[in-house]
Length: 69
Image 1 (cartoon, rainbow, N blue to C red):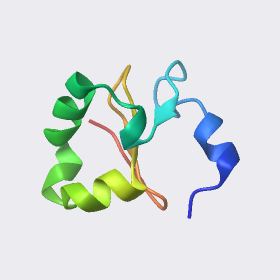
Image 2 (spheres, rainbow, N blue to C red):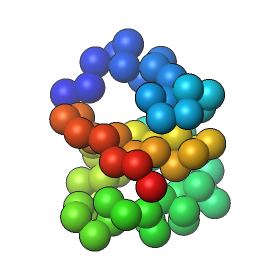
Image 3 (cartoon, rainbow, N blue to C red):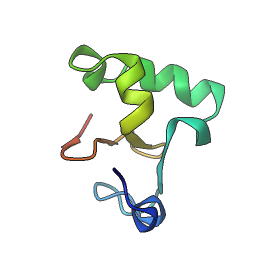
Image 4 (cartoon, one colour):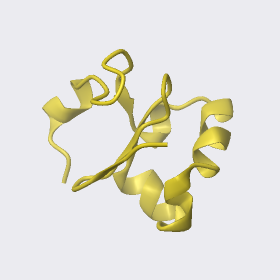
């Protein structure tokens, strides 16, 4: 489970954006997320529940690993 302080972290890839959960993304950002590399490995339901994204550089992070696009 993600800890509350992790939601405040800056993107480890670009250092500018904040990692966002699915509900924090706009409709346009969600459409981009659906097309990212990790979509081939994980179901959309799993990604919505456990992944976070940087809307600046589209870095995607899970609870245990991170994926750069």
